[in-house]
Amino acid sequence: MRVAVFWLGVFNLYRVLMVALSAETLKSHPRSLPFQAALSGLRLDVSTLSYLMLPAFLLWAGHQWLPHKMFARLNQAYHDVLAFLLAVLYVASIKMQHEWQSMLSANALEYAKKPGQMLAFITTGELLALLAFILVFSATLILIFRKWATGFSTETAPWYNRLLLTLAMPLALGIGARGGLQLIPINESSAYFSQTPFFNHLAVNPFWYFVHSTLDRDAKKNPYLFMDATAAEVRNKRLFAVADTLKQEVLNHDRPNIVIILLESWTADIIECMGGEPGVTPFFDSLRQEGILFTRIYGAGQRTEHGLISVLSGFAPPPRVSIITIPSKSANLPNVNAVFSDIGYSSSFYYGGEIGFVNMKSYLLNGRFQEVVDKSSFSADQLNSKWGAHDQYVFEKQLAGLRTMQQPFLSGLLTLSTHEPFEVPANTPFDGGNGEADRFKKSAYYTDRCLSVYFRQAMREAWYPNTLFILVADHGHRLPRNTDLTRPESKRIPVLFVGPVVKDAYRGAQIATTGNQHDIPVTLLNQLDLETAAFAGGKDLLNPSAVPFAYYTTDHVMGWVTPQQSLLYDYALRAWKPVDGLQVDSSAFRGHCLDAEAHLQQLYGAYLEK
Image (cartoon, rainbow, N blue to C red; front, side):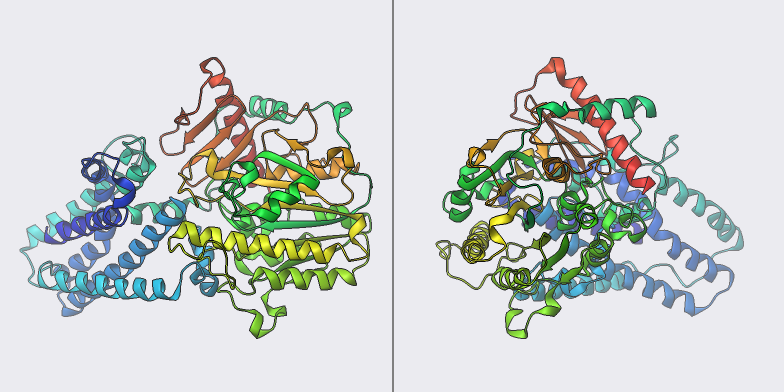
């Protein structure tokens, strides 16, 4: 009994830590909600406890029938290791909630394969503080357990008691693990009770969630079946139906050089001309007057690998999986670079970080990029970022490479200086602030300044007059306005087509079609009269007849954006709701829900088939 009380107390200690570290952002919420979260999450806590107590029970049973002090030692060692693992899990979960407003899932295991890149998310001071906390927290738990909850007694019970407990305990633990005797085993939705995602995440036991996300990773069946397969296919196809005769031709060259610049975390909230914070990206604000700015584009995912496959493969990220980390699937993705390779383009890709991170290297090579440059190509004095080489050096490296590259070419570049922990080697107007938002704006200002230098130098190159530049963010961000990551505002990103090959009549144009970054391949290929059939999940943003909609996903919700309304689908509750504060046309609500359900069903089906 003491062991059970001990671990239930540890589960709730996590909630206390979460609330304490988020106190500033929770001031506007009733103080009773954390207590409601603990109560709502009790069944999941009991389920978790049942799983954790099974090994301890087996050790107890072993000792009861074959008495030996080894069982007590193994029991103590088991709980010591468990205390340490929970300390690590709690720290990682709290950090995940702070950065991505999400619970820690098995996807984090992909980052753990590259610990150097994973640790680049935080400053050295933060790392030392977290390590110290893990050690102190786990040591405290171990001490309390040894002093108060010593596990099982080494004394054997009468045979009839041993037999009864040996037979009854597995049954009790089994019932507890599945959450009761109901028909369907317990799941995370049993803990949900609030309209605010934070409190639902607070209710869900982080150990239970992590383990179940691990088990769900290898799912072979589509968990998002909303309707008959034929009905889903027909409805989804309607979303991408267009009239070919309405295509706008905005380029003056049919075989231009193409440079795709993926801007790390460039949310629309830092771009003044898109309604963002003033003075953060002055060069981008001026550059958009020379090109075509798409103003209602949304990043479908929330990590860099999601943006990469969206822009190059036109494949939206499905929920709770990362296709790029599964080579057998990512190798089957189409790639816009492969299309251009087939017509004689040379190609390259530049990144200042480690290109092997989350399997990016194999993905790019499968996409037939001829040259892939990463941090290993930079000198030691240029590796002055936690992630590798800062943006100024990556832009310089690409410019040097393009001078000797055969035209026409496609070259990609992924920036990194606007990634956490937002440390950049430059003075900016935002140096006075010490908060996260100011550090983020400082890093974005630095990258914008690097872009300015880059374009000034590019204009002197022989290849420049025949070049289209595509600037697009890999994903949005909660900063600088601390936006709820389930809301569409946090996913809105810039897409800019710019360069000498853009027709004069379209320079300074703004396209307000609602869409995603994974619409870029179809939009680009249509401009050059190239085949788009392989990119079935994208639409032509420059075709006025394109259906305006955008999809996005987090680990917990799907978002669906149309000009009329924005909706959220909660994966745990399996329920729709309108986004708070946005006008809802109730007559169209169900229609939009059906569109989104058909799209998700088809998307996940395509993922399984890869």
